[in-house]
Figure (cartoon, rainbow, N blue to C red):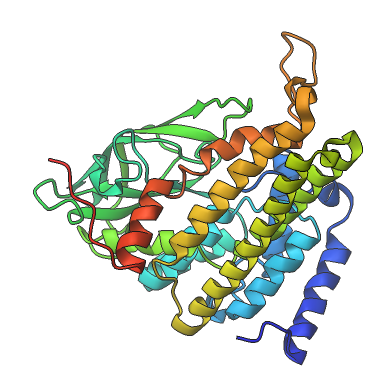
Length: 397
């Protein structure tokens, strides 16, 4: 694939740049790119920004026109994400609704479901969270125990989810729920859509070492949702759940890579300022980190080519997840070594809380990245078995 812009693509890139230059001003520009979709800093301002994006159809730009989208192809989506990242625009808080749930809804939902949910997602009037992981079902998602039973015209749901990002902000949850205990592990699972604002749902924040609590435990105690709130077929939700994970590896990779490049630039700037870049070991590690960003870029473009040709990402997408999560964890460690003793100093008075700087926050948060969105051990299994064709790992008895 030739990744140079055609005349039409160049014109679209100019449109995106012009829109961002006109709208990314004032308090919106002051937010900066932040720490990803889970970042809650300046939340109300970011919510206002997201609604501005929705108004001008940058939310849902890939959707069919009948659902309010632009029907943008993959290249235009990549251009938008690239320019968005280069402009230093705020992290997208509608990620779970627009990026994960909406494409799954378009692929598997009924017409009534699409008409019900897509306009609210685009207008950023309803936010979503992802009900996948449980205390005993993280990487082994097929072990979910949250159970749903049909009671007349409603599903009644009991169980627990964990690491549910921004559940305390969400209006709805797409919840992987076991609906048939007698079926094999990958069967008997349904993809239920559950309203969060009801007496049967309790959200408890999980405070992290960064001082934030954007992740949550969610408890369902006779929570209810309408009988029609099933995406796909009852007891056949595994393929729907896997489709959602595929969309998670979609066209946003380029903006992520640009964000990592910017973060590396910050580390290099500190190393040059405090003199640590003069040391041979630190200088070598900085060079290796730069090479890693370029590997990320070109591997991402390779995946983009596959996506453009096939319409979906195959198991090779695990290569990217394994690489970037390990790279970013290593960058966090490098940043602390560059900061030296200053890395152990935090702002704020003792007993009054503390404020991490961006490199400290990134170091701490990146420790989780080899676990969430698919643990590295699972990614290696997928690559070995489904990409390289190696024998399957023996199942423990």
